[in-house]
Length: 457
Image (tube, rainbow, N blue to C red):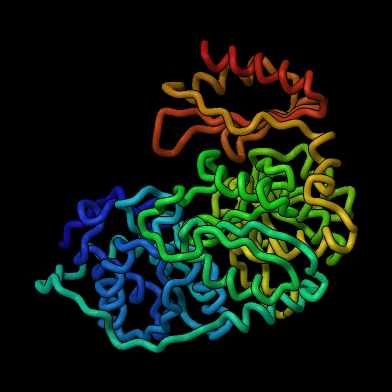
Protein backbone atom coordinates (compact mmCIF):
# COMPACT_ATOMS: atom_id res chain seq x y z
CA UNK A 1 0.00 0.00 0.00
CA UNK A 2 1.37 3.43 -1.00
CA UNK A 3 1.95 5.96 1.76
CA UNK A 4 0.09 9.21 1.22
CA UNK A 5 -0.22 12.10 3.68
CA UNK A 6 -3.84 11.99 4.83
CA UNK A 7 -4.03 15.69 5.72
CA UNK A 8 -3.99 16.75 2.05
CA UNK A 9 -7.52 15.45 1.50
CA UNK A 10 -9.74 18.42 2.37
CA UNK A 11 -13.48 18.90 2.44
CA UNK A 12 -13.54 20.69 -0.93
CA UNK A 13 -10.27 19.75 -2.64
CA UNK A 14 -6.81 18.24 -2.26
CA UNK A 15 -4.21 20.68 -0.98
CA UNK A 16 -0.84 20.71 0.78
CA UNK A 17 2.75 21.93 0.86
CA UNK A 18 5.10 20.87 -1.93
CA UNK A 19 7.03 18.62 -1.64
CA UNK A 20 6.65 17.75 2.07
CA UNK A 21 2.93 16.90 1.79
CA UNK A 22 2.33 16.47 -1.95
CA UNK A 23 5.30 15.20 -3.96
CA UNK A 24 5.53 13.90 -7.52
CA UNK A 25 4.78 10.29 -6.65
CA UNK A 26 1.71 11.32 -4.64
CA UNK A 27 0.51 13.43 -7.60
CA UNK A 28 0.91 10.42 -9.93
CA UNK A 29 -1.02 8.10 -7.62
CA UNK A 30 -3.89 10.56 -7.16
CA UNK A 31 -4.05 11.21 -10.91
CA UNK A 32 -4.34 7.53 -11.73
CA UNK A 33 -6.90 7.00 -8.94
CA UNK A 34 -8.95 10.01 -10.07
CA UNK A 35 -9.28 8.75 -13.65
CA UNK A 36 -9.97 5.22 -12.45
CA UNK A 37 -12.68 6.29 -9.99
CA UNK A 38 -14.55 8.19 -12.74
CA UNK A 39 -13.97 5.44 -15.31
CA UNK A 40 -12.89 8.39 -17.41
CA UNK A 41 -11.65 8.43 -20.99
CA UNK A 42 -11.36 12.20 -21.49
CA UNK A 43 -10.18 14.75 -18.90
CA UNK A 44 -9.73 18.54 -19.05
CA UNK A 45 -6.78 20.13 -17.26
CA UNK A 46 -5.52 23.63 -16.49
CA UNK A 47 -3.05 25.15 -14.09
CA UNK A 48 -2.68 28.31 -12.04
CA UNK A 49 0.54 30.31 -12.22
CA UNK A 50 2.34 28.71 -9.27
CA UNK A 51 5.64 26.93 -9.89
CA UNK A 52 4.44 24.20 -7.55
CA UNK A 53 1.47 23.52 -9.84
CA UNK A 54 3.69 23.35 -12.91
CA UNK A 55 5.93 20.89 -11.07
CA UNK A 56 3.30 18.35 -9.99
CA UNK A 57 1.18 18.60 -13.15
CA UNK A 58 3.22 16.22 -15.40
CA UNK A 59 3.21 13.53 -12.69
CA UNK A 60 -0.56 13.77 -12.14
CA UNK A 61 -1.28 13.77 -15.86
CA UNK A 62 1.01 10.76 -16.36
CA UNK A 63 -1.17 8.97 -13.82
CA UNK A 64 -4.27 9.92 -15.81
CA UNK A 65 -2.67 8.75 -19.06
CA UNK A 66 -1.64 5.43 -17.52
CA UNK A 67 -5.29 4.93 -16.53
CA UNK A 68 -6.19 5.11 -20.22
CA UNK A 69 -7.29 8.75 -20.42
CA UNK A 70 -6.91 11.38 -23.12
CA UNK A 71 -5.89 14.79 -21.82
CA UNK A 72 -7.34 18.08 -23.06
CA UNK A 73 -5.08 20.87 -21.86
CA UNK A 74 -6.21 24.49 -21.36
CA UNK A 75 -2.78 25.79 -20.33
CA UNK A 76 -2.51 28.37 -17.57
CA UNK A 77 -6.16 29.13 -17.03
CA UNK A 78 -8.78 29.67 -14.33
CA UNK A 79 -10.55 26.91 -12.45
CA UNK A 80 -13.93 27.87 -14.03
CA UNK A 81 -12.54 27.21 -17.53
CA UNK A 82 -11.90 23.58 -16.56
CA UNK A 83 -15.50 23.09 -15.45
CA UNK A 84 -16.77 24.93 -18.53
CA UNK A 85 -14.64 22.76 -20.84
CA UNK A 86 -16.01 19.58 -19.25
CA UNK A 87 -19.54 20.69 -20.14
CA UNK A 88 -18.75 22.24 -23.52
CA UNK A 89 -16.74 19.26 -24.79
CA UNK A 90 -18.74 16.53 -23.02
CA UNK A 91 -15.71 15.27 -21.09
CA UNK A 92 -15.67 12.85 -18.16
CA UNK A 93 -14.07 15.18 -15.64
CA UNK A 94 -11.52 17.89 -15.05
CA UNK A 95 -8.62 18.96 -12.87
CA UNK A 96 -7.36 22.43 -11.97
CA UNK A 97 -3.85 22.49 -10.52
CA UNK A 98 -4.18 25.21 -7.91
CA UNK A 99 -3.75 26.00 -4.24
CA UNK A 100 -6.30 28.81 -4.71
CA UNK A 101 -5.62 31.59 -2.18
CA UNK A 102 -3.07 29.66 -0.05
CA UNK A 103 0.40 31.18 0.48
CA UNK A 104 3.50 30.43 -1.59
CA UNK A 105 4.76 26.88 -1.15
CA UNK A 106 1.37 25.21 -1.43
CA UNK A 107 -0.04 23.22 -4.31
CA UNK A 108 -3.37 21.52 -4.83
CA UNK A 109 -6.00 19.92 -7.03
CA UNK A 110 -9.61 20.87 -7.69
CA UNK A 111 -11.37 17.93 -9.29
CA UNK A 112 -14.77 17.65 -10.94
CA UNK A 113 -16.83 14.92 -12.56
CA UNK A 114 -18.80 15.05 -15.81
CA UNK A 115 -21.76 16.69 -14.05
CA UNK A 116 -19.63 19.60 -12.84
CA UNK A 117 -19.67 18.41 -9.22
CA UNK A 118 -16.59 19.51 -7.30
CA UNK A 119 -15.14 16.39 -5.69
CA UNK A 120 -14.64 16.87 -1.97
CA UNK A 121 -13.93 14.55 0.94
CA UNK A 122 -17.55 13.41 1.11
CA UNK A 123 -18.24 13.60 -2.62
CA UNK A 124 -15.65 11.37 -4.26
CA UNK A 125 -12.26 12.20 -2.76
CA UNK A 126 -12.47 9.40 -0.14
CA UNK A 127 -12.80 6.88 -2.95
CA UNK A 128 -9.88 8.47 -4.80
CA UNK A 129 -7.78 8.33 -1.62
CA UNK A 130 -8.59 4.63 -1.11
CA UNK A 131 -7.75 3.77 -4.71
CA UNK A 132 -4.52 5.80 -4.63
CA UNK A 133 -3.27 3.89 -1.59
CA UNK A 134 -3.75 0.58 -3.42
CA UNK A 135 -1.77 1.62 -6.50
CA UNK A 136 1.92 0.63 -6.37
CA UNK A 137 4.20 3.63 -5.84
CA UNK A 138 6.00 4.36 -9.13
CA UNK A 139 9.73 3.62 -9.06
CA UNK A 140 10.35 6.48 -11.45
CA UNK A 141 10.40 9.91 -9.81
CA UNK A 142 10.93 11.86 -13.03
CA UNK A 143 7.87 12.78 -15.07
CA UNK A 144 7.50 14.69 -18.31
CA UNK A 145 4.34 16.18 -19.75
CA UNK A 146 2.44 13.33 -21.46
CA UNK A 147 0.79 13.53 -24.87
CA UNK A 148 -2.19 15.88 -24.82
CA UNK A 149 -4.47 18.00 -26.97
CA UNK A 150 -4.32 21.76 -26.49
CA UNK A 151 -7.77 23.36 -26.37
CA UNK A 152 -9.16 26.89 -26.06
CA UNK A 153 -12.74 27.48 -24.92
CA UNK A 154 -12.63 31.25 -24.41
CA UNK A 155 -14.77 32.02 -27.46
CA UNK A 156 -17.39 29.46 -26.32
CA UNK A 157 -17.32 31.03 -22.86
CA UNK A 158 -17.90 34.45 -24.39
CA UNK A 159 -20.78 33.09 -26.47
CA UNK A 160 -22.36 31.61 -23.32
CA UNK A 161 -22.14 34.94 -21.48
CA UNK A 162 -23.54 36.86 -24.46
CA UNK A 163 -26.74 34.78 -24.34
CA UNK A 164 -27.41 36.02 -20.80
CA UNK A 165 -25.88 39.50 -20.84
CA UNK A 166 -26.05 42.22 -23.49
CA UNK A 167 -22.30 42.74 -23.62
CA UNK A 168 -22.65 45.58 -26.11
CA UNK A 169 -24.32 47.65 -23.39
CA UNK A 170 -21.18 47.55 -21.26
CA UNK A 171 -19.53 50.71 -22.52
CA UNK A 172 -18.18 53.95 -21.15
CA UNK A 173 -16.76 52.53 -17.91
CA UNK A 174 -13.33 52.99 -16.41
CA UNK A 175 -12.56 49.75 -14.56
CA UNK A 176 -9.59 48.77 -12.42
CA UNK A 177 -9.11 45.03 -12.92
CA UNK A 178 -6.71 43.21 -10.57
CA UNK A 179 -6.00 39.57 -11.49
CA UNK A 180 -3.86 39.03 -8.37
CA UNK A 181 -1.09 37.55 -10.52
CA UNK A 182 -3.35 34.55 -10.94
CA UNK A 183 -4.73 32.30 -13.66
CA UNK A 184 -7.95 34.30 -14.03
CA UNK A 185 -6.03 36.91 -16.05
CA UNK A 186 -6.31 35.05 -19.35
CA UNK A 187 -10.11 34.77 -19.45
CA UNK A 188 -10.59 38.24 -17.95
CA UNK A 189 -8.34 39.74 -20.61
CA UNK A 190 -10.31 38.03 -23.39
CA UNK A 191 -13.61 39.43 -22.10
CA UNK A 192 -12.67 42.91 -20.97
CA UNK A 193 -10.67 43.96 -24.04
CA UNK A 194 -13.90 43.41 -26.01
CA UNK A 195 -15.93 45.76 -23.84
CA UNK A 196 -16.28 49.38 -24.89
CA UNK A 197 -14.58 50.61 -21.73
CA UNK A 198 -11.18 51.68 -20.42
CA UNK A 199 -9.58 48.82 -18.52
CA UNK A 200 -6.74 49.50 -16.10
CA UNK A 201 -5.06 46.12 -15.66
CA UNK A 202 -3.13 45.20 -12.54
CA UNK A 203 -1.20 42.00 -11.79
CA UNK A 204 -1.99 40.38 -15.14
CA UNK A 205 1.53 39.10 -15.76
CA UNK A 206 2.57 35.62 -14.58
CA UNK A 207 3.63 35.95 -10.95
CA UNK A 208 3.95 32.74 -8.97
CA UNK A 209 5.46 34.67 -6.03
CA UNK A 210 2.48 37.06 -5.68
CA UNK A 211 4.96 39.93 -5.38
CA UNK A 212 2.45 42.80 -5.30
CA UNK A 213 -0.08 41.15 -3.00
CA UNK A 214 -1.36 37.74 -1.98
CA UNK A 215 -3.94 35.67 -3.89
CA UNK A 216 -6.77 36.04 -1.34
CA UNK A 217 -8.78 39.19 -2.23
CA UNK A 218 -10.89 38.98 0.93
CA UNK A 219 -7.91 40.22 2.98
CA UNK A 220 -7.81 44.01 3.34
CA UNK A 221 -4.06 44.16 2.63
CA UNK A 222 -4.67 42.53 -0.76
CA UNK A 223 -7.34 45.08 -1.70
CA UNK A 224 -5.16 48.11 -1.01
CA UNK A 225 -3.49 48.53 -4.42
CA UNK A 226 -6.73 48.24 -6.39
CA UNK A 227 -8.45 50.62 -3.97
CA UNK A 228 -5.70 53.23 -4.37
CA UNK A 229 -5.77 52.83 -8.16
CA UNK A 230 -9.54 53.37 -8.27
CA UNK A 231 -9.16 56.63 -6.36
CA UNK A 232 -6.07 57.73 -8.30
CA UNK A 233 -7.62 57.16 -11.74
CA UNK A 234 -11.17 58.12 -10.70
CA UNK A 235 -12.41 54.77 -12.00
CA UNK A 236 -16.04 53.71 -11.79
CA UNK A 237 -15.17 50.59 -9.84
CA UNK A 238 -12.53 47.96 -9.14
CA UNK A 239 -12.72 44.18 -9.46
CA UNK A 240 -10.22 41.80 -7.84
CA UNK A 241 -9.98 38.11 -8.77
CA UNK A 242 -8.37 35.46 -6.60
CA UNK A 243 -5.41 33.21 -7.45
CA UNK A 244 -7.34 30.68 -9.53
CA UNK A 245 -9.99 33.03 -10.93
CA UNK A 246 -13.13 31.64 -9.30
CA UNK A 247 -13.83 34.48 -6.85
CA UNK A 248 -14.45 38.17 -7.46
CA UNK A 249 -14.34 41.04 -4.97
CA UNK A 250 -15.61 44.55 -5.74
CA UNK A 251 -14.38 48.05 -4.90
CA UNK A 252 -16.71 51.05 -5.33
CA UNK A 253 -15.82 54.38 -6.95
CA UNK A 254 -14.60 55.81 -3.63
CA UNK A 255 -12.10 52.96 -3.25
CA UNK A 256 -14.08 51.15 -0.55
CA UNK A 257 -14.38 47.37 -0.35
CA UNK A 258 -17.94 46.07 -0.74
CA UNK A 259 -18.87 43.02 1.31
CA UNK A 260 -19.77 40.06 -0.92
CA UNK A 261 -23.03 39.87 1.02
CA UNK A 262 -24.24 43.13 -0.56
CA UNK A 263 -22.99 41.94 -3.95
CA UNK A 264 -25.04 38.76 -3.39
CA UNK A 265 -28.11 40.92 -2.78
CA UNK A 266 -27.48 42.92 -5.95
CA UNK A 267 -26.85 39.85 -8.10
CA UNK A 268 -29.98 38.12 -6.77
CA UNK A 269 -31.99 41.18 -7.76
CA UNK A 270 -30.38 41.21 -11.22
CA UNK A 271 -30.86 37.50 -11.87
CA UNK A 272 -34.50 37.65 -10.79
CA UNK A 273 -35.12 40.53 -13.18
CA UNK A 274 -34.02 38.23 -16.00
CA UNK A 275 -35.44 34.91 -14.78
CA UNK A 276 -38.72 35.17 -12.90
CA UNK A 277 -39.83 33.12 -9.90
CA UNK A 278 -36.74 30.95 -9.57
CA UNK A 279 -34.96 29.52 -6.54
CA UNK A 280 -31.59 30.96 -5.52
CA UNK A 281 -29.19 28.97 -3.36
CA UNK A 282 -27.40 30.99 -0.67
CA UNK A 283 -25.07 30.04 2.15
CA UNK A 284 -26.31 29.85 5.74
CA UNK A 285 -23.99 32.37 7.39
CA UNK A 286 -26.03 35.50 6.59
CA UNK A 287 -29.60 35.22 5.38
CA UNK A 288 -31.91 37.86 6.87
CA UNK A 289 -31.49 40.52 4.19
CA UNK A 290 -30.70 38.32 1.21
CA UNK A 291 -33.76 36.16 1.86
CA UNK A 292 -35.93 39.29 1.85
CA UNK A 293 -34.33 40.59 -1.35
CA UNK A 294 -34.98 37.28 -3.10
CA UNK A 295 -38.59 37.07 -1.89
CA UNK A 296 -39.31 40.70 -2.77
CA UNK A 297 -38.04 40.06 -6.29
CA UNK A 298 -40.33 37.05 -6.69
CA UNK A 299 -37.79 34.32 -6.01
CA UNK A 300 -37.37 31.57 -3.45
CA UNK A 301 -34.36 31.55 -1.11
CA UNK A 302 -32.81 28.10 -0.68
CA UNK A 303 -30.50 27.96 2.35
CA UNK A 304 -27.37 25.82 2.15
CA UNK A 305 -24.49 24.86 4.42
CA UNK A 306 -21.48 26.94 3.38
CA UNK A 307 -18.89 25.39 1.11
CA UNK A 308 -18.36 25.18 -2.65
CA UNK A 309 -19.34 21.52 -3.11
CA UNK A 310 -22.37 21.89 -0.82
CA UNK A 311 -23.80 24.72 -2.91
CA UNK A 312 -23.17 22.94 -6.21
CA UNK A 313 -24.80 19.75 -4.95
CA UNK A 314 -27.89 21.58 -3.67
CA UNK A 315 -28.15 23.64 -6.86
CA UNK A 316 -28.13 20.40 -8.87
CA UNK A 317 -30.79 18.87 -6.62
CA UNK A 318 -33.03 21.94 -6.79
CA UNK A 319 -32.11 22.70 -10.41
CA UNK A 320 -31.37 26.26 -9.30
CA UNK A 321 -30.02 28.77 -11.81
CA UNK A 322 -27.86 30.83 -9.45
CA UNK A 323 -26.05 30.42 -6.14
CA UNK A 324 -23.84 32.65 -4.01
CA UNK A 325 -21.55 32.51 -0.98
CA UNK A 326 -20.28 35.23 1.33
CA UNK A 327 -16.75 34.38 0.25
CA UNK A 328 -17.12 35.90 -3.23
CA UNK A 329 -17.97 32.59 -4.92
CA UNK A 330 -20.80 32.69 -7.46
CA UNK A 331 -22.40 29.73 -9.21
CA UNK A 332 -24.31 29.48 -12.48
CA UNK A 333 -26.32 26.73 -14.14
CA UNK A 334 -26.09 26.05 -17.88
CA UNK A 335 -29.87 25.81 -17.60
CA UNK A 336 -29.73 29.62 -18.00
CA UNK A 337 -29.36 28.99 -21.74
CA UNK A 338 -30.34 25.34 -22.11
CA UNK A 339 -33.34 24.03 -20.14
CA UNK A 340 -32.38 20.42 -20.85
CA UNK A 341 -29.17 20.55 -18.84
CA UNK A 342 -28.36 20.89 -15.13
CA UNK A 343 -24.61 21.61 -15.11
CA UNK A 344 -23.31 23.97 -12.40
CA UNK A 345 -20.02 25.85 -12.45
CA UNK A 346 -18.47 28.53 -10.26
CA UNK A 347 -17.40 31.70 -12.04
CA UNK A 348 -15.89 35.13 -11.35
CA UNK A 349 -16.36 36.81 -14.75
CA UNK A 350 -20.14 36.49 -15.02
CA UNK A 351 -20.89 38.45 -11.80
CA UNK A 352 -18.70 41.29 -13.06
CA UNK A 353 -20.52 41.46 -16.39
CA UNK A 354 -24.00 41.19 -14.88
CA UNK A 355 -23.27 44.08 -12.52
CA UNK A 356 -21.76 46.27 -15.25
CA UNK A 357 -24.78 45.68 -17.49
CA UNK A 358 -27.13 46.56 -14.62
CA UNK A 359 -25.22 49.75 -13.75
CA UNK A 360 -25.35 50.94 -17.35
CA UNK A 361 -29.06 50.13 -17.78
CA UNK A 362 -29.99 51.93 -14.56
CA UNK A 363 -27.43 54.75 -14.80
CA UNK A 364 -26.08 53.97 -11.34
CA UNK A 365 -22.68 53.79 -9.72
CA UNK A 366 -21.87 50.57 -7.85
CA UNK A 367 -22.05 52.51 -4.58
CA UNK A 368 -25.55 53.72 -5.45
CA UNK A 369 -26.65 50.25 -6.55
CA UNK A 370 -25.88 48.66 -3.17
CA UNK A 371 -27.07 51.56 -1.01
CA UNK A 372 -30.56 50.08 -0.62
CA UNK A 373 -29.03 46.96 0.95
CA UNK A 374 -26.37 48.65 3.09
CA UNK A 375 -28.92 51.06 4.54
CA UNK A 376 -31.33 48.29 5.48
CA UNK A 377 -29.19 45.31 6.48
CA UNK A 378 -26.25 45.87 8.83
CA UNK A 379 -23.64 43.14 9.19
CA UNK A 380 -20.84 42.44 11.66
CA UNK A 381 -18.43 40.85 9.23
CA UNK A 382 -17.04 37.46 10.23
CA UNK A 383 -15.66 37.59 13.78
CA UNK A 384 -13.26 34.84 14.86
CA UNK A 385 -12.86 33.76 18.49
CA UNK A 386 -9.83 31.62 19.28
CA UNK A 387 -9.59 28.80 21.83
CA UNK A 388 -13.36 28.54 22.17
CA UNK A 389 -15.18 25.21 22.54
CA UNK A 390 -18.09 25.42 20.13
CA UNK A 391 -20.36 23.00 22.00
CA UNK A 392 -20.07 25.04 25.20
CA UNK A 393 -20.76 28.33 23.40
CA UNK A 394 -23.66 26.71 21.55
CA UNK A 395 -25.38 25.70 24.80
CA UNK A 396 -24.97 29.19 26.26
CA UNK A 397 -26.48 30.86 23.20
CA UNK A 398 -29.32 28.34 22.92
CA UNK A 399 -30.25 29.00 26.55
CA UNK A 400 -30.01 32.79 26.23
CA UNK A 401 -32.16 32.91 23.09
CA UNK A 402 -34.44 29.94 23.84
CA UNK A 403 -37.60 31.77 22.77
CA UNK A 404 -36.31 32.30 19.22
CA UNK A 405 -36.32 29.93 16.26
CA UNK A 406 -33.01 28.13 15.71
CA UNK A 407 -31.50 25.62 13.30
CA UNK A 408 -28.28 23.61 13.08
CA UNK A 409 -27.85 23.52 9.30
CA UNK A 410 -24.39 25.14 9.58
CA UNK A 411 -23.40 25.48 13.22
CA UNK A 412 -26.06 27.30 15.24
CA UNK A 413 -28.36 29.89 13.65
CA UNK A 414 -30.77 32.07 15.64
CA UNK A 415 -33.62 34.07 14.10
CA UNK A 416 -34.41 37.18 16.15
CA UNK A 417 -37.18 39.73 15.63
CA UNK A 418 -35.10 41.83 13.23
CA UNK A 419 -31.68 40.24 13.64
CA UNK A 420 -29.91 36.99 12.79
CA UNK A 421 -26.94 35.15 14.32
CA UNK A 422 -24.85 32.31 12.91
CA UNK A 423 -22.08 30.71 14.92
CA UNK A 424 -20.09 27.81 13.53
CA UNK A 425 -16.86 26.02 14.39
CA UNK A 426 -13.76 25.99 12.24
CA UNK A 427 -13.14 22.58 10.70
CA UNK A 428 -9.40 22.71 11.37
CA UNK A 429 -8.76 24.98 14.37
CA UNK A 430 -10.22 25.67 17.85
CA UNK A 431 -11.92 28.76 16.46
CA UNK A 432 -15.56 29.83 16.52
CA UNK A 433 -16.73 31.98 13.59
CA UNK A 434 -19.55 34.45 14.20
CA UNK A 435 -21.73 36.35 11.70
CA UNK A 436 -24.46 38.72 12.86
CA UNK A 437 -26.98 40.74 10.89
CA UNK A 438 -29.61 43.26 12.01
CA UNK A 439 -31.94 45.85 10.54
CA UNK A 440 -30.55 48.68 12.68
CA UNK A 441 -27.02 49.63 13.68
CA UNK A 442 -28.12 49.81 17.30
CA UNK A 443 -29.45 46.27 17.31
CA UNK A 444 -26.35 44.99 15.54
CA UNK A 445 -24.12 46.49 18.22
CA UNK A 446 -26.39 45.22 21.01
CA UNK A 447 -26.64 41.62 19.77
CA UNK A 448 -22.94 41.49 18.85
CA UNK A 449 -21.97 42.55 22.36
CA UNK A 450 -24.39 40.11 24.00
CA UNK A 451 -23.23 37.15 21.94
CA UNK A 452 -19.57 38.06 22.30
CA UNK A 453 -19.85 38.21 26.09
CA UNK A 454 -21.53 34.80 26.18
CA UNK A 455 -18.98 33.15 23.88
CA UNK A 456 -16.08 34.41 25.97
CA UNK A 457 -17.47 32.96 29.24
